[in-house]
Length: 452
Image 1 (cartoon, rainbow, N blue to C red):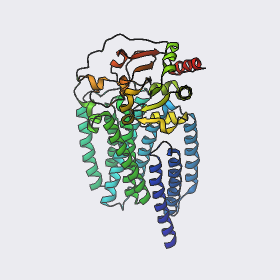
Image 2 (cartoon, helix red, strand yellow):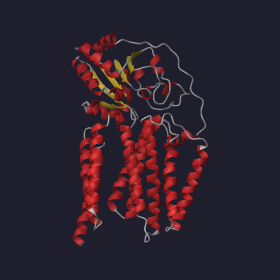
Image 3 (cartoon, rainbow, N blue to C red):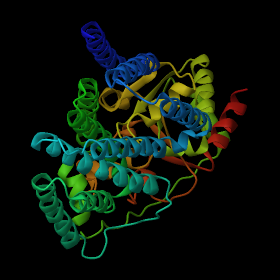
Image 4 (cartoon, rainbow, N blue to C red):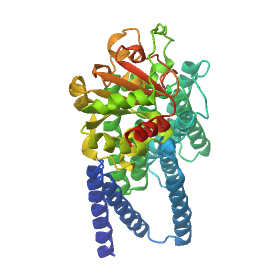
């Protein structure tokens, strides 16, 4: 028995090491796939060791869950569109929180001590908030909830819910035999997740997804303490810490604090920025080709519009043609482009764009003055010069990719509609900007035909 316990603990240590190495490899697009594979092996080892640690387990339920869950995961990963990937990540976070909530409830027992009950409360609170908050984030990202804003009297309701959570948490710990306190605690935790995410604007969803990912890890960590499982504590801590770090990176990229992102929806409405007027200069695909043919340096700035048009493959084909024509081509990636962290990196990696051509915002901005043509594909807010020039703009001070400093800017859009943040973009009226209206994939395909 002692040898078996030593083997289990050793398996936990190996699994934890694999998680750490997996996270390290996830830090680069070139090694991200390997990082996922290493982490998956670590998780399999952790699950097997945890089952052995429990002693007598009905494996029929375990295998049933493995088969059903594996089938759902495999089907989802195959069928999900790249445009829907942010919504899937939100659901992953949510169900991770729900699992931790269920583990916390299962840990309640007559012999549970004060510390165990405290960790149960944490797993229920964080897990419940993560679950319903992620469902709301999924609804906002998929636009199934429309432009849902803060509820009437949201501040008062939120304060009341927080007060109820504190009171019922104390009552549950003081009187653990009462199921009423537990049920009220679960209900309020689920309600608070809804209240927390509903007021947050759609443009802040990349930050929210990253934060909810961190919450799911913290909930797992609390559940690990509740059932005294070391590997769950370690795994949850790693996810929680990495999620917080990524959240901070996202906030820095938007020049906003996390509190501003989370609670700006509770603030009093601010006066909208004045509408930006000017003359738009449209350009045909044929004329755009002649400009690109003479270019020696091209920067491509992708955004969510590229994902919607599923244009990443033709974008890579255009890159190859430009390089054969003698142009240097790079991609400028803004940290919050798209609907989730790394969204553009995933799309371009799927199209086999070389990783060394993907430049972060801080890398591409200093060289934008030397770029002959900057091609903006479906991006809006992350290239909006109002962040530098218009003090009344809601995004004033946010770091953006300075495409307007390029000699010529092509903006590929379906229409003059504002971006996800609902803010007008003075870039469209700049003297060096040309608008190419239409579906991005069809436009780029037309440019490819011109090269051929």
